[in-house]
Image (cartoon, rainbow, N blue to C red; front, side):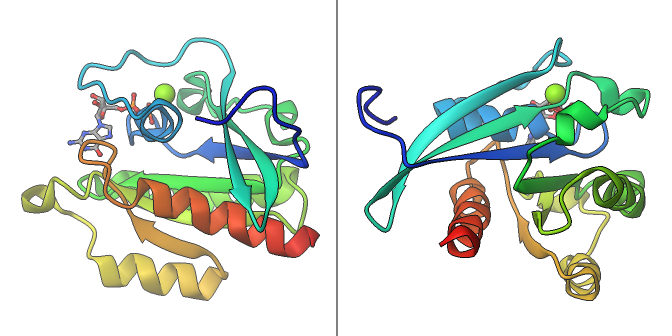
Length: 177
Ligand code: GDP
Ligand code: MG
């Protein structure tokens, strides 16, 4: 994706947050490399991946950060949030607890990140419809109340993964332009 020799007009840092095993790393793998793994290992070490895209004839490098398993210890540091202009707040539609923890993640995000950060709530694993624990309407309502974008995605079948990132990146682009 993207010609490495091209000039970059913008770099946008976007952070992935949410409970362990909701699919953050697989969403990123799908977006950055169009890959998916069913037995993905817990992420080791803070890492980011990039993908360069064109918005309005400008080249934008999305630098997307993935937590390093710190979500288990609630130890995501302020360095992780520093400079972030976008955030993807992910829960698993099949596990109620991961949705119930969203307000905590939002609170942490609002405490550490820039107040103008663009946030999207993501209900991942939409391919597992038969195991759904969180009705779409409940999440939509929560997102509206909190002023967040909202989409359900599947890293497994790639549904809405592109849309989720383009929603955030286009909104950031509109804010800075
Ligand atoms: P993280 O801890 O939030 O980074 O979660 P991972 O990306 O490591 O994913 C945790 C588990 O859920 C792995 O076994 C993935 O293969 C699986 N997984 C992630 N996304 C999806 C999805 O969209 N659908 C299904 N069915 N499984 C997923
Ligand atoms: Mg991970």
